[in-house]
Amino acid sequence: MLNVKAVRPELVTLLASCFLLLGFNATLWQHVFSITEFDGKGLALRVAFGLLVFCIFNIFLTLFAFRRVLKPLLTALFLISAGVAYFINEYGVMIDAGMFRNFAETNATEVQGLLSLKLGLYLLLLGAVPSVLLWKTPINYRHWPRELLSKALVSVACVAVLGAVAMINYQGLSSMLRNHHELRLMVVPSNYIGASMGYLSEQVVSAQRPFVKIGEDAQRSPRWAGHQRKSLTVLVVGESARAENFGLLGYGRDTTPQLSKENGLIAFSDVHSCGTETAVSVPCMFSNMGRKDYNASQAKNQEGLLDVLQRSGLQVIWRDNQSGCKGTCDRVTLQDVSNLQDPLLCANHECRDEILLQGLQSFIDNLDQDTVLVLHQMGSHGPEYFKRYPKAFEKFTPVCESNALNNCSRESIVNAYDNTLVYTDHVLATLIDLLRKQSRVDTAMLYLSDHGESLGEYNLFLHGTPYLLAPDQQKHVPMLAWFSDSYQKSFALDPQCLQKERNAPLSQDNLFHSMLGLLQVDTKVYNAQLDMFAGCRGTLANE
Image 1 (cartoon, rainbow, N blue to C red):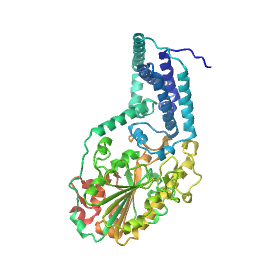
Image 2: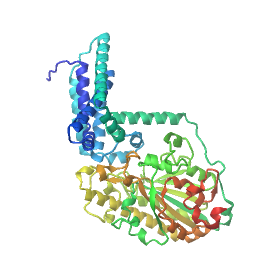
Image 3: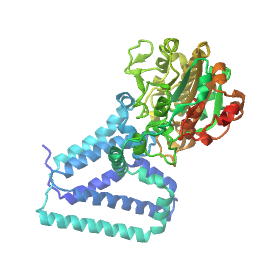
Image 4: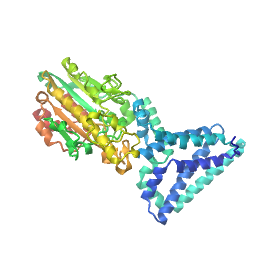
């Protein structure tokens, strides 16, 4: 039997602080080394930064170094930090409230796609093994007065070291921390502790906010009286599609072979997302706040585009093949098709995006209301890109067939990702072809991806990097529009004008007002300056 001598809590917190700093922060230290010079000053700056973080860790742990508290706390820190370190090291993610929101609001299918043997090894070696050793080590606590005095002395000593480090290398540290805001998002475990507190605070604030209605004056314009047929406007919300790899937008590979042959399709080249993760981009693009003024707790307690459209008398339906609508469809009809038992399109609790089109012709045949149908795709959701498309669409090979992207070549990752776009191309082209052949309904399709994706650029994978730090690959997204001839006539749209405007700078901020303007909904919350169709609706746009 292992015979371990009892130790003081000060030694435990000191060793734990060292372990947290060195065992879980490989990516942090790689980054620190990359942004500091390889000379005496650089070495001093690295040491100063390490002491700064170590002392902060030690002060924090010292405050909780009490019987029945310290061991459970460290066990939780080790296990959670092991998982966080895996995702940081593997995908280059940065942990903020937005990333924590992604984790908190994901579903079982997405979580399952992130599990791997390598993650298990991280949890075992960095989480479980140190925790077992910790619990086998007896800790000799003093009586309360002496224990408190000891903690006070340790805290004072750490503060003194912090002060000395700051005085000796203030200019270097302040410059590094001021110019590299990403550092605070890379330090484990303070990054996820801060992120979780931010997210929980957001939820508390959200729960206390009164629910706000917007566009209560919404009604359809008198111009609707001239419509001869019912209309179906399909808005497709893509997932993780980045403009850089879209064939229609100039990518070197033909990832959009079917869409490139669609007559009347308009591909907007300069569109940027509101966020870099679904939990932000989707509610933001359907709100009237815009990216700069977007507030998650406010969006959760406020109506959005779909509510205004429904209030105007349009039928609104959200058909979902992903992890939900993030609150944007809570008050309209929801059709969840992500877990249907279709033997051709569904397996392992996941369905391919063609499931979104299932029964659509029958739906149109029985359409008796002007309708807005939102299709939420699984799209190019990573890291298991190879699962997002049927084998028949595996145009580019070899492909990465692992969720541990660091184990794959970049070529195979890009190949798998590009194949997801080839499949999205097929789904969208099939949808357009179906809409085109309708004779009794005016039809239109608008496609907009929620955010982009990193495929190894700057050692980043997936998405969710804080917006200010995120590369353009995570923010530059494709947007497409197609309108049937009868829809163009009914809604007074000039497609040639739209083609000329396809390179204009746009963002997801435009969606709310563009949909209201397109669908001729009169309301005070409409802003014509953000309506990307306003200048191409002929004389009706100015009425």
